[in-house]
Structures are given as C-alpha cells and as structure tokens.
Length: 302
Image 1 (tube, rainbow, N blue to C red):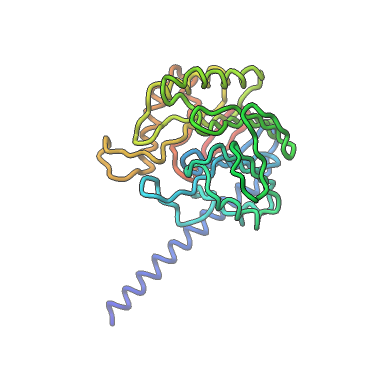
Image 2: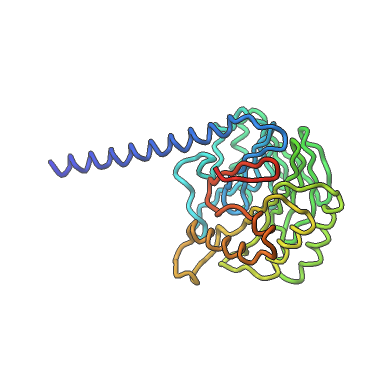
C-alpha cells in the first residue's frame, strides 16, 4: 500500500510539473502575441523544418507549418503553443493570419491547417501549387504578384517544387524560399535566374529563410553556395537556415535526430560563411519554438 502511495505522489508531481511548464510556455507566448509592434518590427518563431511564424504590426504570417510526427522527424511537442513551435489556433484566433504553403510535401503542408479556420476569425491560405480542394484558398503561380489583405506578395519558381514567397508587409520585406535551393549543380542557373528576378526589385530584404540542408545529414556544396548567392543579391538583414529537422545523423553516432544536431549543423554553416558580415546574419539553432525580435535591421533572441 505504501509503495502505491509513493507512486501516486510521484505521478501527481510529474503531472503538476508538466502542467506548470505548459502554463509557462503558453503565458510567455501570449505575452509575445499581445506585444504591440511598430512598422518594420517583427517577432519570429521557428516551427520546425521550413516552418516559421512571423508577427508584424498588423499581421501574423505562417510559412510552411510543419506538423509531421514520423520516425525520421523530431516528434511533435506535447504542448501546443507557438512557444514550442506548434500552431494553436486558440492563441491566434483574434489576429489577422495569412498562411503561406510553398509546396505540397508533407514537411511543408498538412490538410489539418484548414481546421484553424473554424477558430481563427480572419485567416487566408496562399498556395504555391493548386491543391484543387473545396476549401477557400488563393493559388499563386510562379512570378505572380498580388496584394492580399494589404500585403504585397510576389512568387518565384522554386528549384525543387512549388514557389518561393517575397512578401512586403508592415514596412518589412520577407523572403521564404520554400523548396528552393541549388540542391545539385544543374539547378544553379534556374536558382540564380529567379533570385535575380527578385533582386531587380531593388528592395531591401529584412528576413530571409533559406534552405541549407538536404535530408540524411547531406549538405552539398552547391546548396551552401546558393545561400551565399542569395545573400549577395538580396542583402537580407537576417538569415534563418532551414530544412535540417529531418536529418539522419549516423555520422554523429546518433540513431535519432535531435535539436542539438540541428544546432551543430548551423554552427558548421556559420563557420563556412564567406565574410564576418554574412556570419553575423545567420541566426537560430533550429529549436522548435525558438523566438526572435527584429527591429532596425537587428535581430535578437528572446
């Protein structure tokens, strides 16, 4: 009987600590979402893989929300909040939300995103391919320009599939590459041509989300060179490497991917940066829920 009592107390203690952690995560996220932002300011959350959420003065932009929970991906967090890198529609129900889906890969898109519309009062879905579904959405072809809820959006053709998004919102310019990169040398011309198309706009880029890893712990030199090319042409103030959550890492002696593996890979990328200036732009460790504040061309971690 005594052992049962101790077991019960232990379980209650564990559940209580989980409850406190959950409340802390959610309250911290609520505080950031309630923060009044000026034009040219942003809060950025890492959602895993190519997924990011960006809160600006008047909008919440969600790019390629990552919800996969498979063996070769990091498991889904137990607490659903932006603070753990998971979209909780109840947290964002009163915000003006635009969801950008660059391609149909399951590491970029899941049909569950349409459930958010049942709770979020104002939400728009923008697709870089036509899913041909009954739900309301906007389909944008490559090199198409639209104004959506006061947000100017331009697309370019991605090298792998779908599109990349170039977004002008609340005084900020944001580039989300999606599945766009020089994954193999033969893609270099296509990649360069599309990046040059954006560079010709002569707009300063604030935040750039760029592919730097291609599955199984593999990062070809051509892919890294594409990052440096995009930096030279678009001159972003901050670079967020993306695409490494699904790494297989036998070369690190680990049987499963871990968040510190992602951080290790990003540190390697930083070391390879061509200049100190570029090196200083690369931010993030890849941890889901990691949050940053951007203002006056500078980005800091919360």
